[in-house]
Image (cartoon, rainbow over all chains, first blue to last red; front, side, top):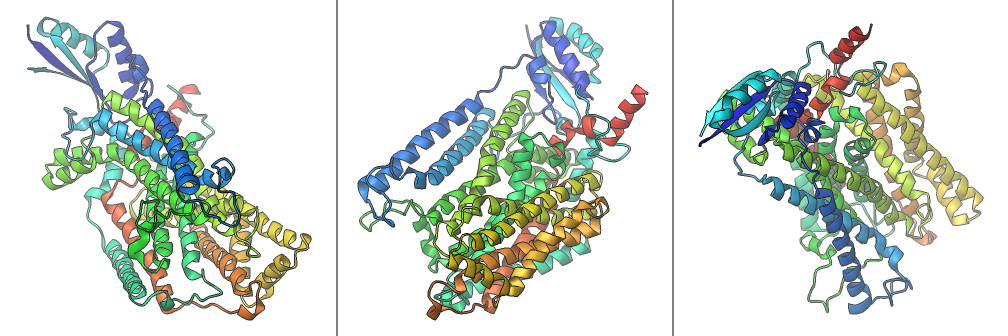
Length: 174
Length: 465
């Protein structure tokens, strides 16, 4: 039993979302969808799980905030306390208002940058990576649904994809 | 699908818009050849930039004595320019972050170029305080790095250090926000080059696009990261200029030591930032034929923001003036009398005219939808904002608490040269950007094509009636 890959190309995002709903409810699993922009409603139509990248960002920020408090306490209270215009330098707590700006900035810095890096790693996009979209038109104005199936179902699925409004259906044999 | 109210004016004009047409229009400036006007502008900007580099090299070689700053007026031309450029940088992130959170669709036509402008402006800004350090090769001392001086740490009580943190965070976060949006657009140009058989462009844009393929999951993450970055950048926009204002406000110099400074500086920053966006965008939309995407409505929205923030700045000026008298503090009131009637009265009144009077013209719809008037006023506003910083810095310092040290300040040609150089760098960078990068966030714009374009709006209207 060999697997076949079907590329169905759609010209319109509304048609695509409706097609995705039909395909999903028919129990056919969609391997991948390549789109030129974020099509709203498509992740819901295919029941794609929500990304947890915002939670990651929060965790990075929380760690950064704690780290900033700890290091500022170390620099200004523990290691080398200085008298700056009579400002209290014997505890972090007494002088915290002056430290809020750097703590805030460091928190934002880490949550933004590490979230960006998380995106790069999760989606594996880096300089030098070979793009995986099978058709160059999918970054312009076409929407490609990629389905992997075994050979005896190819015709049935192709016909169904045509019915949902696909403008081209291509079968790529492995 | 979501439909926008038909009374809202369309944000994409043209009678035959399609996803492909957007790609074509955005890619044209990257794929086409530069014309003579572009090369002319680029050459002038490039020469100005080289001139600035020369002046910087001279400053480093001779020392800060090459500048007109003196013992009494220790901050002058350089910090004026620093604050001016940082202010200009504020519009980009405001447009991309704050307007994203408020779901303002009109940001999509202009966010890319505004963010580019932000990044270049922040680079220009950073030059001034860094070179004012004198020994620039020791600039890394502003970072809390373990060192050989008994581990003497940087002073976390100082707003100057807060500024280091604020500006480096602002700059780097703006860069990633900007670049994230660019990735799918680079991918579009890469794939067009692939179809056209342009091997060189394909290679360059494959690297720049990080191998983006536009998979479903990529877009889900992309949107989430954009939203969270917008959320993170929003307080950042307000914090950066607040902290810049604290460089002044936490001191005890009359005219600086006021609590009004943070909101007043933030309003001024947005005011000047939008003015610079208008200056650039008005030329860009014409030269690159993008009038269908950066419409008169976009220009009008920006002019309304200028009118609002200009009025806020005006109220701040008047409040300062009133409080200086009402407080009964003689140093404070003298500082303000000296501002408007002292030796630098011309700077004060230039500021007042350019910043308070001129934006009021935008109350008239005729003026705020007139492109020529907008262009002229955008330059007037930025001139005024430069004078504002000059007034705050120089007039407050030149007559301080000790009359025996009162003095005047005037810039040397080297300081002027560095300023001209930063303007040169700014335009060199922006002109390069306009030929190499997609100047409109096309993948974002495509998401509103069916909602906010003239063609689709007409279609739905016909359908209803």
